[in-house]
Figure 1: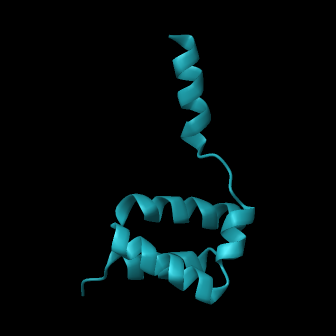
Figure 2: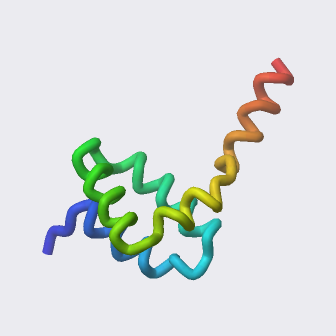
Length: 75
């Protein structure tokens, strides 16, 4: 059975919706794997489910973000 990234991440996001940080992390991961059309459909689904507000309030920098700044400063 083949499942699209869109359907896969809908399932994942529903399962992790109890934790805003984890939800945001999985959402960021989903964006890396989906094309623009799938992202637009995911955004629509998030708004319909009421998850979009959770995503906005839980914006945190990715873990690698701070590390990349430190690496650039050391060079």
